[in-house]
Structure formats: structure tokens, C-alpha cells
Image (cartoon, rainbow, N blue to C red; front, side, top):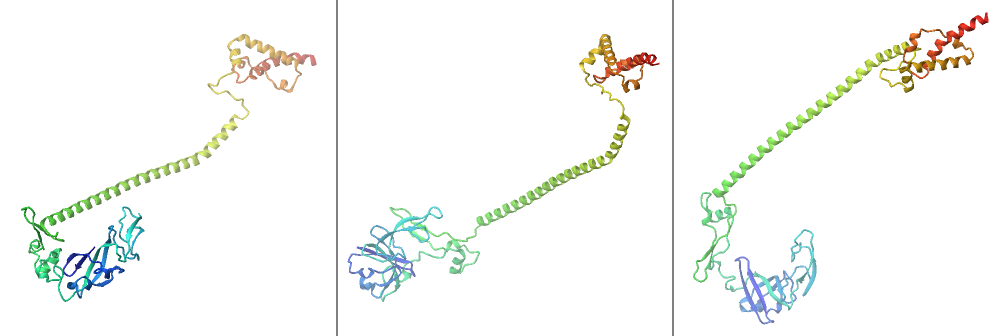
Length: 349
């Protein structure tokens, strides 16, 4: 047994019939989708009618797929662009079973469309449309006004096509009507005004934020520029100061070098003195011992030019603190050398 779903698009009607005899629907075997088939074999009422195959299902419920030139089922890798599969994510593919586009004996349902009408009308299919109220009408507000010749002031909601569904078990009938598209109501106007106001507020806020940001950025840049200029000025002033003071410092250094040339170096104040000299100067006994050892050393030496050039210095100068370990020795030799020379001169004469 095969079910045939017959549709007539001009009236928007369809009818499902059951065909038990295989000889009646044998004309559909080995036919493909979108192929036209004469329906005379289905019965006397279908004489002169021509059907167009639009789809079908096999006994397991798999739908026919256009382009698959087979009269049985097969498995195909589908990506969602050819139908039969809707991927959950973009780029997903899945292998699924589909029925070929060629009709066979394993069909359970065939969908057809009336392409050519016969001499007799089919009940509830091609009979007069005035006998049945239209269940579908225009949904857009402008099209409803055109269909009924209404103006913009008229209420469009009263002229939309409605469908009554009888209630069961004593309940009230249900009235269904499509949602009118592009219908302007007071609530719609209020919502539009609110949206426009929000847009204006947001635009003002964005402009204010942009101005504040620009001012802050300008302030930061000026502060950085002022700091950089002050740094450059300080560096330039330090360079000029060093350039002017360097010659003066060089001249002063030369004068000091000339003045100090040939003079013995004097230890700076606060410089640590050798421990041996500090102890020798603290006690007078150690000073005399050092003087005696110096006299003995000079007596052993032969007379040198240094002895001739040496001159006697007052004893008060010997008490000055020496800067180095050799200083006490020189002071003792200067005091003792005059005695040696005075004794030697009468003998030569």
C-alpha cells in the first residue's frame, strides 16, 4: 500500500489518498523527482490530470534526496548545504543515510502536485474556492489596506483573515489570526521615542567623554613637554657653567702649582701620623736617643756636599712635628753638622 499526498497550490489545498492496488501506482516506478506523470491509472476521477513528483519517503522513513541517482538507500557525508542535515557548528560534517531520487517499490509515501487539471473537479481539491473560506490572507498592514481599500486611519486588525477552530467537549471555538507585520500602534510609537531618546543621551555622553579625554591627554602632553624643556635647560646651563669655570680653574691650578713648587709637603690637618713619631714626640727621652744615633751615623760618613751646604738652624725649629719618618733625621743632622765642621776647620789650617 502506498499513500499519495496530492496538492493544488492555486487553492492551497491538499488531499491524502491510499492506493492498495500496485497496478494503479505502477506508473510512478522508476520515475525521478520533478518528473511529470499522468494520473489516469489512479481512477476515473483523475482522468486528464498530470502530477509532478516533489518528494517521498520509503518504508523506513528516509526521505528522497534530489541528485542521488539511486532507487535505494545510501550513506552520504553531508555538511548541511544540501539539506537532510543541520550542523550544530559551522564546518561540521556527518555521514547520514538518504533515499535516492528514483522511485521504487519500497516507497510508503509520494508527494505530488497537480500540474494539469482534468475535465472534472476533485472534491476538496480543485472545486470552487468560493465554497471554502480562505484560510490564508495578507499579513502585512500595507497589503491588507490594499486588499480592502482602507486608509491609514482605519484599524487594520479588524480586516485580517481569521480561522475558527471548533472546540472539543463543549469548549469555545478558538479563533486564530496571523500576526500583522509592520503594524504601527501607540505602543510602537512610544517605544520608538524611547529608543531615540536613549540614542541621543548616549551620543551626548560619548561626545562629553571624548572631550574630557582629549583635554586630559592635552594636559599630560603639556606636562611632559614642560618637564622635557626644563631638563634640557638645566643640562644646557650646566654645560655653559662648566665651560666658563674650566679656564679659571685651570689658571688657579697653575698658580697654586707654581707657588707650591720646591716647598716640602705639609700633612693636612686631621691626617693620621705614624705611631713611632707620635710616641717619640710625646716623650723628650726618645728625642735625645734619636739625636744621638743620628750623630753617630754622620760621624761615620765621609764629608759630602750636603754637609757643606747645610746650615745651622735654631733649636726651636726642631720641635716642629715631622710629616714623615725621615724628617727627624734631617733635623738632627742640621743641628749636629755645625759642630763637626767647626772642629775640622782649625786642623786644616
